[in-house]
Structure formats: C-alpha cells, structure tokens
Image 1 (tube, rainbow over the protein chains, first blue to last red):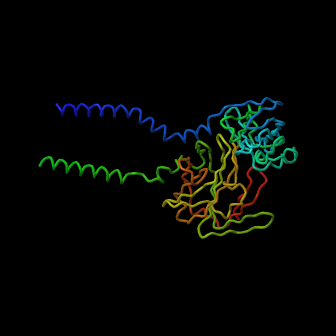
Image 2 (cartoon, rainbow over the protein chains, first blue to last red; image 1 turned 45 degrees about the horizontal axis):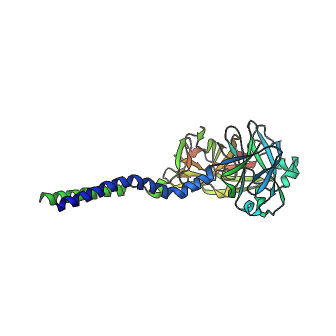
Length: 180
Length: 197
C-alpha cells in the first residue's frame, strides 16, 4: 500500500521532469544566447530612413542632407572616384556624439565600398572644397544648432550601377539613412 | 559474483570510452583555426570575402629596392621569395594583412618586414570589390623550405574561423635562385618592376 503510493508519486515526478525539459531546454538556449542575439540585431537588423535628394531627413539627433555626389576619373580606365558630400544640422548633440558614424556605398549587386581614409589626389585636384571637408567622424565635436559639412570619397568600378549611400550612427541603430 | 563482474566490465568500458574521447578532442586552436580554401598557382582562388591569383614567383639571394635613383641591397641568410599576384575584394572593401609561407615541415614564415614599404606590398593595399589590384608578397625562407611550400593568405592572422586561401606552390626550383633582383617603383598599372641584374 505504502510502496505503491511512493511509486505513484515518483512516477508523476518523473513524467513532470521529462515534460519540463521541453520548456527548460529552449529557455536555457534563449537565456544563454540573448546577449549575442541583441548584438547580432544591432549589427544586422536595419530600418531604413530614406532621404530624398535635396530634402533634409531627421536621424540620430540631426537633420541630414546630401549636398553633392560627384563622379571623377581615377586615372585607370575601369575605376572611378565617387565623392559624397553631406551635412548635418545638429538638434541633439548628445545623441549625435554617441558612437561612430559609418558611410557605405552600395550598388545593385549588393557590393559594399568603404570610404578612403584620405581623399585621393584626383579628389583634391577636382574638388578641393570636398577634400578639405572632414569625414563623418567630425560629428564628435557637434554643438547644438551647428551645421557640420562632411565628405567621403570612394573608389569603385566604372561599371557599378544603382549606387546608394548608406549612413549609420551607432547610437541610432537599427535605424539607418539612405541618400538617393 | 556475476553482478560484480558486470560492474567491473561496465566501468572499464566507460573508462576506455572516456579515454578515447579525451585523446581525440580537438584543441581550442584546432576548433577555431582558419578554414582553408585550397588552390593552384595561376588559378583564381575564391574565398567568400576575397579572391587571389598568383603570378610569377621570383627567388633571389639579394633584393635591391631602387627608389629616387638610389638602391639599397637587402641580403638574407635564406632565400628571398617574391610572389606577384592579383587580389580583389568580393563583396566589401577590405585589406589582406596576413600572408604566410608554410614550409613542408609545417613552419610558417610571415611576410618580411624589411620590404613592408615596397610598392604594391600586400598588407598596405586596400582592395575594392570589382577592382582587381596587383599585389606583391615578400618572404625570407630557408632554402630547404622552398619546394613543397604553401602560400597562405587571409584577412588577418588571428581571426578565428575566417577563411584562408592556401596555394600549393609547385614549380619552385632551387636552380632558379638568382643572385640579385632589383625592385623598382613603376607608374604603370602594376606599381613595381622586378628585374634580375
């Protein structure tokens, strides 16, 4: 009688434990990978804000506007230089200053070009004003009400089509800005 | 009696299995080592982030870098191996900071720092998608490590689980070692010239 009762309780605990595994195991995986998932989302999940040509777009505590997109010969036949000039009118310097700013040029084959560290000689000759503008990192000394003019230059194949300029500021991710 | 015997056999079996697992567990370095993409000289080898083709391989006892009319001869106790090639980024702009000569006995030789300012030298090049760029790699390798060597190229020497291109360098003959080689800057599409003196 007694033995049967114990056995019954044990049996119930056994099945409960087994059923609990179905919940506990996935939960353990979620808990363990939560931080990685958040980091992955920060890097990969993106919400686009499109800035139309000639119009300002609010993003990361500033009003952004594309002011120039110039194509220059690079010297060799199959490469060209693209100079992207843009400006940001700062609304919230705290938000703008937080984190690095990145500009990437993409084409319709989803290739990504990163900007040059120093503008090429051809940029300095053809567009000296753009070559003197600071790169996107200039946001670090943003003050309220200022308009910061910036430029980035890229070396890309002359055959690339469907170019788009992407701009992200770390603090504003996952949102990013596209200049068309 | 049979119970005790059975217990003993089970423990011995478990110990043997555990020992086997312990001996065959790959080390952390093996688990996270770069993933090798192999290829042949002269053939375009494609990793997911970049592609590279090797061209001529020059062997020499001494390399002279000629710039602004002056030349400085660099001798070595081994052999200079200068590998010409063309590299291209595939989807995003990048630099290839690591190239190694893997000798037949497994020893790796990193790029020679003495030619790090030479024109077109690999780690200094920024590669753009769609724009193949001529690159030069220079190693100092003991003569015995020449034939049967493998050229390893990767984005960086320390990133785990990145792809690494491995090109088995056939056709390397110690007879081809020249006493002198002159490396000069050039204004053409290839930013250097290499001539035997």
